[in-house]
Image (cartoon, rainbow, N blue to C red; front, side, top):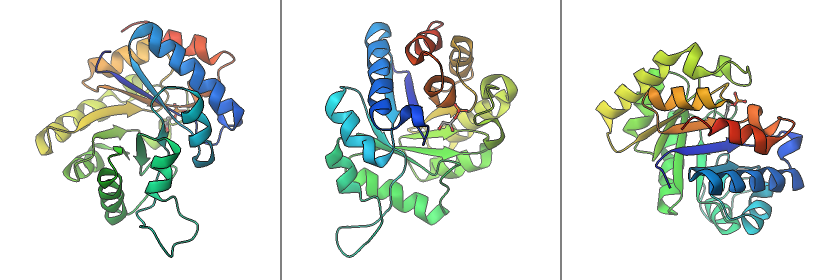
Length: 222
Ligand code: G3P
């Protein structure tokens, strides 16, 4: 396995919901086995167990709530996420933003449960701030490019290189992913070229007519 990481966020796309989540995860697993690159998926909470129990690949939650066991209602409890089979979690995705204090508490909660943490950021300054909190990964994604089909690695390479530099300066143990508009082999190759260790992506694969073929194209240039 290379050290490159690809995480496919299934969001609430219908194509990535319920049995759809299992199908997309199976495509990820097949392509990961073919190319030797780690590919994980982030399904909705209710699909974590369904995916993790049927497909042998890393499963991430899309977020979690920093609550403990006990008198809490309507929360995504870390123990439940872990028991469902997740190995990590996204935190602070642009579509599920948190306060700085809650990002910190979510990282601590996940880390205490031995879950990997991917904190999403929207620019260089927030990448630096997130790095100071010590997650495993910072994933920089300019919100205006999310779902646009315009790859961050082409449209805004500076936010990737700037985040890589800032994160390295603040906390060299933290690795950087980038995302937004990534779907093709050249996008992933460019993302790696800019110093990130991988990508966080969604629509270009989940909504593709043939997600497996789209994934094969994604990994074709590395
Ligand atoms: O979490 C991944 C994401 O926000 C990027 O979405 O559709 O631009 O690949 P997309």
